[in-house]
Length: 280
Figure 1 (cartoon, rainbow, N blue to C red):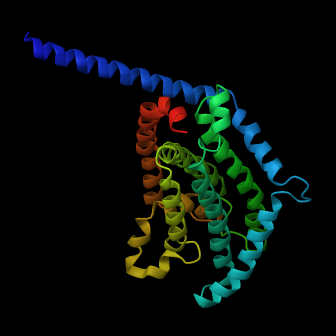
Figure 2: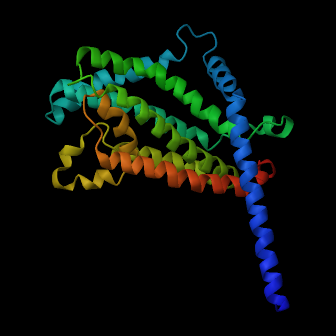
Figure 3: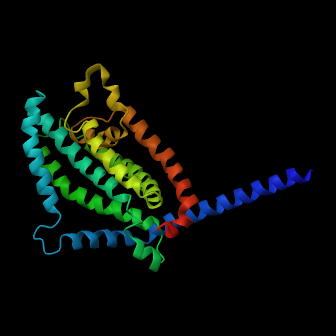
């Protein structure tokens, strides 16, 4: 075999071996983070610290969100000529889920940057810091879910048979947020301006996502909303709560994102995991 071909094959073998080692370390990082739930304590401690000496703690966010929904519901329901009950359901669930998603996306870019002290002084799996941000906003989401329950108490869903489908919808949404957060945390620790871009995009997405308005209002152009992946993430949680089955397209999009996006984020994490501490 010619020398240059042999050297080329050896180089490919070394690169493959290195990539395999990086992937193994990344998977180990994820496993260790899951089996050592420090992220739960960090998330809870951060919430407690933020609302220290506050009488009702994170329920302040619940109150402000509830007031917003109570004010917007009759106004926009009348403006869009929608029945009050179904519109309140649509708005309340959509806005509560949106507050969760947008808050997480705006913060997760700083997951590694804000944990600089921990990363440099304590040996903790890097995944822990992404999990911490996700769990923190999940806890706040559960507080805000009181609003959804209150709205559904006054305006019951068409049927309760679809309600159990909320659980798989929530799991798929969390899986997607996890890989998106991992990718953003890595990109933002390397390129700090990306976090500001994400904030601007999130603000824009609020108006492009069917939260205050409904897809049916677009008529024949409803496919414009279906290109919005955030819409599908909200829909797999919202539809079961209003007595509807999420459409097949939403499941295909969200599950496909979870698989493909998860694989891409894992490769990105494996490739740049060792550089995170140097980029901070």
